[in-house]
Amino acid sequence: MKKCLSVLLVLVVGASLLMAGGAKEESITPKKGETVTIKMWTHDDLYRQFFQKRIDMMNENNPDYQIALDAQIMPNTITSLITASVAGEEMPDLIGVEQGWFPTLMEDNNVESFLVDLTDKIGDRYDDYVQGRWALYTHEGKIYGLESALTASVYYYQPAIFEKYGVEIPTTWEEYIEAGKELAKHGVKIGVMDNDASGIFSLMFLQRGGQFFDQEGNLVLGEGKNREAAVKVLDMLREALDANSLEVVLGNEFWGSSIPTAFSTGKVAGMVAPDWYNTSVLQPGVESMAGDWRVAPMPVWEDGSGYRTSVWGGTGFAITKSSKIKDIVWDVLDDAYMSLDGQLDRYKTINFYPTMYEALDSPAVTEEEHPFFGGQKIGAVFADVALETPPLWQSPARPFLLQAMVDNLPLFIDGKLSSSELVDTLVEITERDAQL
Image (cartoon, rainbow, N blue to C red; front, side, top):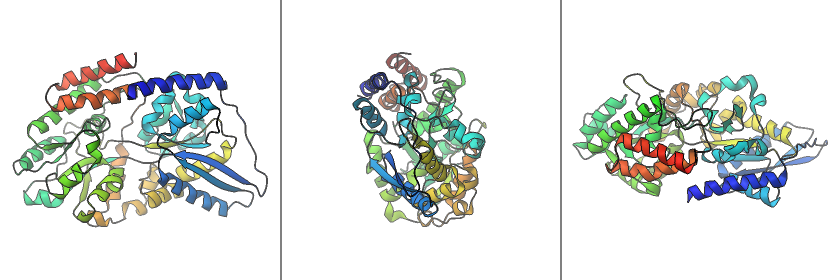
């Protein structure tokens, strides 16, 4: 189904460009005392809340004109953007782009017709932000979106379980395997194995330094060091699976009750997951376990390969080419996402860790004590590992690879595909379905 949808979207984009002949470059200068409305589309109401807060603050300090926010919540903003373009309907000025849908706009450089190139506006501030986060919205060297969250990953764990069985918290993946084997003797799993395309396999692969695609969008999973990294990760996961030390949770059940139940019953000691997993999934799922959790850095590789953390997810905000108030929209986006105050306010308001190095080093992040984690200053852990955050390069072929991973990881988990066979299968299917 995703395959058909991806192809359909590409065709629709092409049709929209033929009909529109490209977006017109228009700009409106507000008159003194005028109210200017920014039309925003996003899939999450948290972003509406945050942008509304920042706009309210800007209005208090702007004697010339006021800004109003007209925000609409929709499940897939890019599909809606393309549909609106074809129908000749009004489009947004500011749009939230879930990173998994950015590849849809990369086909045939269609992103240039829909979104504003922000590269020059970012300018020499590029190095002030976590480098890997720019990759999600980069196409042919141009940046089209600003990321909302760090999405760095850590190991969430229950210290009481490790203490009960005399097992040390693992700092390397090799230690993780051995600790998992020890816990398995007592019927406890050290983590979770899933078939999500951005799940544990992807997290470990990116952390080891692998890339599915290169900066030009070419599929490189099956080549050289990338293939070696993928096989290495899968072999390690196979060892853990064979030792019965990982809880297998497939499909949509990953977001259901299975994992919280396993946590609360002591069946699973913890799991590697990104920062947003804490407030979006973990705490709501095991609310009664407040104080029983801690955060440790994601295990690293004993041989020194790769990074100290990994990434999963993200949502960037972009300015549409059709907007007639691009400069005003940029002022809002610049305030909310590029300023120190905006980065810290986003963390405070919607709990997304900053992507700005200076903000990550702020005591507001590193010194905050979190009751759910027994008063631990978990922000210091995220700030530390954020210095080594891998990029995730995009490609128009990425949706096909993601679907292939969802479909074939269960075969690997069941032992029907070896590590090398899975990698070769993913490459073969992606090349075939993406017509590479």
